[in-house]
Length: 334
Image (cartoon, rainbow, N blue to C red):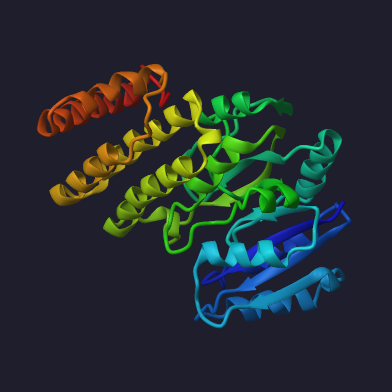
């Protein structure tokens, strides 16, 4: 079983050599490595090419160059279209993987014929602790259970460190949305709505470098606007695919709404226009007919029945309260 490892490269001169070495040193034999040159202005590609040239496994590497900078989503999409492997593995070029990462994931995926396999990860370079993998090693079957675990944030939204069957990606057209950040959120949401089997390796197979200068480390108004745009993407996807509209998928959509609203509320530098835009999108992008929502989303859905100003005040108050309880450790996201 061949695994295609897709690595977009842009502005990572200091880290890309470490990343590529970790891939070429894999214990798993049957890999192809796709380096997507997204026209970085620094010396990232030269470092990458030098690293490959000096390694015994250099023949498994292909380089694909964009004609102009297109961003992370388009780079991953280029990799999907060019890959020849049975499974795809997305890796950010400032992260790196354990020597046995692909072997562990591929063995688990192959054993169960899973739509995708997922491993745990270790954070380096930061004291932040983003959501981790909270499922024991083994197999999860049935879409309802996979969706339930996604709703409960027991497997993470990040695209990396997931080994995904190529035929599954292409059958469901699981490409990344261009022109935004937080592109992993709709991608993983779509996977959760259609996957029937998920193999789990609850062992760190990836080292996630949360450096302060990276895309994910900085907040900005544009990134908050992208979160609002993602709500529209999720709504359009659910509307176009009524077959994936379930109580859990719609509850998860409603959960994305309040999580994103909370980001805008606390990180938006008191931008009232942006907060109002977020709430308007939350109200407008609603899936009908009403479904049986999970408790938090069912309670928050009361705002839909209220006049706009009152509804927004109610929504703000409940999210502030939930955030305070979360900080006190009294409740969880779900």
